[in-house]
Length: 275
Image 1: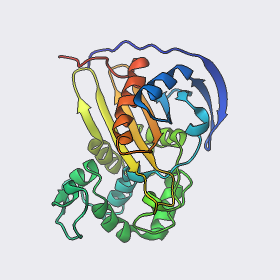
Image 2: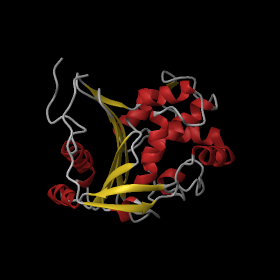
Image 3: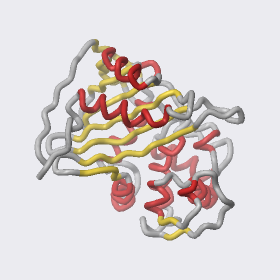
């Protein structure tokens, strides 16, 4: 991939206590304009792999745990493959569940497309096979969030007790990028492959969305996530964004905000690259 210019405006350096370790944090107050322009409230944390410096907007929110929603499909997929519940990304799932409101869920899927389209019924099938006891063991091994898979074995990541912060998302993703999670290299590489969003001559973007919308029946705060990393020939840059979801149009702003922030740091190309 071609090299990409990188730059960052540093406003304030502080020490923020994180669950696993203390990180040197650069707070970017100027990113508020990006969130305001999109009409949303939230946080984003960005870190180059191997760097102890984390760039962040709203470090207080970035340290707060939220329900992971479909970003949990990253560790969930790893666990399912590692336990042998899923053979590979081509494993086939016919429609065996009731009709869903999201149309893309009402068709057969492979494991890869179930990940891509966040097909909850497929992952609920897997979750019931994993079981709460094995989730408890694996979340502890993976050091994932607050490590609490309680509140319903097939929906705890949607409205149960599991919580993870933006800072914790970065810590987890960094270990995945480096193939340092306590699982086989094959399982980690398979999940990394399924996270591919886009690629050109300049960069590769791997990411996963997560969403809990506004609903009176929810026991959790509505939240929208976008987490992942950008690979270039000079660096791999992790990011974790979450925003408040207050209306039907807010979820569409996740990528807009994150991409603007990543471009401001030079981590994402300002325009498509050509070979």
